[in-house]
Length: 237
Ligand SMILES: NC(=O)c1ccc[n+]([C@@H]2O[C@H](COP(=O)([O-])OP(=O)(O)OC[C@H]3O[C@@H](n4cnc5c(N)ncnc54)[C@H](O)[C@@H]3O)[C@@H](O)[C@H]2O)c1
Image (cartoon, rainbow, N blue to C red; front, top):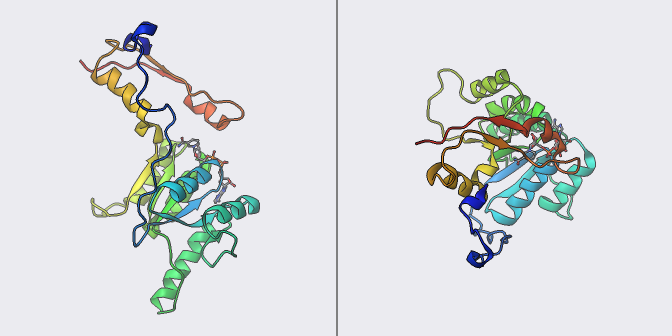
């Protein structure tokens, strides 16, 4: 499809200025007060986020909530406590355990007790069907949240999430951030593809798009049921 705008013969090909696979950008300098993140679910995505935070941001992975002992320990050793023993507030057997601890921590702080530092944000990296329960459960804590896509598995759950994050009567502007991990929207190849198709009209009017994610048993097989879709799209004139 993209041949319509790319080189049509070998002689027209130009050597790319940059390699296809770029190295990750260098770490930004650490801020004095790095954002502290709790990862909920130390599975495939949780580990990817842990690594990204650790290698490429000025934030820090402060805690992990994961029921599987082995995953929690490996994650914690890699991104939180290293070869030392985990400290209070760095590991939880699940999001509910974190919630309980955090509420108590806030109570203790109110009583003037010395308490461990909490977290600024939570990344929800569990499987789809747990997202609604976790987000609505943690919403009262008013922490920044990033939830892996998809937001939830039903419209009802999405509405429930919206309500929990923005209860009726709450001020319309809030400094607490909520995001969904639609990462491909920001990937360079998709940004270019969108520009070519929608802005440059590189292949003229689009009447239909077939989007297939190449998933297999070794790669996000749980995505298979979601991503094979066909829908008609009309390019703006
Ligand atoms: N953004 C993307 O490109 C992308 C790609 C793949 C998957 N996803 C989504 O990311 C999410 C996670 O997918 P994954 O492949 O990492 O799944 P995974 O199964 O590898 O990881 C989920 C983890 O959550 C843990 N968990 C279960 N119950 C928990 C609880 N109560 N509290 C804390 N942790 C709990 C599990 O033990 C597991 O380790 C899914 O919603 C998936 O659809 C997004």
